[in-house]
Length: 431
Image (cartoon, rainbow, N blue to C red):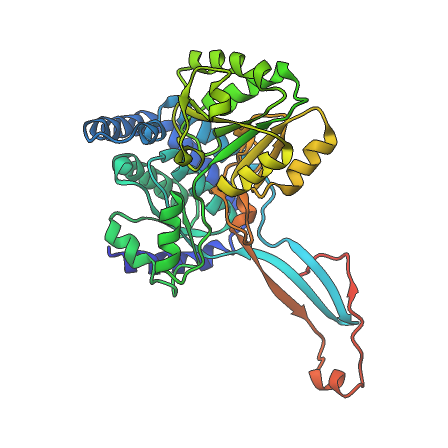
């Protein structure tokens, strides 16, 4: 089947999927979870084949970490799928209700976007998260994973497709795109694809935006920061920084740059160096930092690099203002945190730092759809459009207006015979 045929199938399926009941969608989610459980051994074998091939092809370390899909990760994604079952159906919610005049009522109603084209690399768990969120939110999808995970993606798509169609979903609602040429062809399919969601580098997202007129929800680099203010609780500094860097080093919400106020640097840097090096983290730092601890010099490139690896850059700053300026200049708008005891200082930081998630006294690893209670996530958007930060089901929704009348004519209002009341209603849309 060609990519055009797949896109047409997805478009056709999207119209049915958008109108399915919560009962059918939840039944399909349970069928998906059960099928993943019963086929766990086959999934692991396929992933091992991908992993061994990628090792031989010298795939970069961070991508290898993301590629691995073992029993623990499969159990986690199954838990994520099942968590969506208990969540409210996002389709058909009344977002606004207004009486234009008695007997003429306007409602804004949530509805699926339609067909999403999602391009991601390496992570098979992302395929399961994406498909489950699209299912619950009533969106069809075209998926293009990285070639390094080809066997894993193929078996996952087959399992998800077969189990959910048997449970009542329309055939063609999930399609796996195979080649890079197919992806380039997708960029011109405005007639069939409503939204593109790339998960990759800033350059990759920019390339898609330049080569497609389809709306793009960018999920790009995670150049995340932690700023340690002068009054930070030193007892929490090491645990938070270590967790942010090493809990899962290949994630986009791991900290990449540590900014330390000059008045606390000598107290926290030696302990941080010891704790991080025990976790095999390579440290680079500014000249002032290197006067306190023995580490490799940082370059200008380091401040703008997403390592997703066991490496961390450290810079000493003179003030909160300097920290914020550094973050807004070098950061990617992903996730940034401050460690401070002062609520006012935290408030200034969280107001002025331009990021999709700003955190106070906790690990950057909390910036995640599952941890935020969204069930799972499509990814973390650094765009400033309808969805920002961890994108759950709400990021896959749009709305339509329903106007319920009783014979009204515009001429009645333009002539002055009738007047608009524009009164807010508390009612849900009856249709």
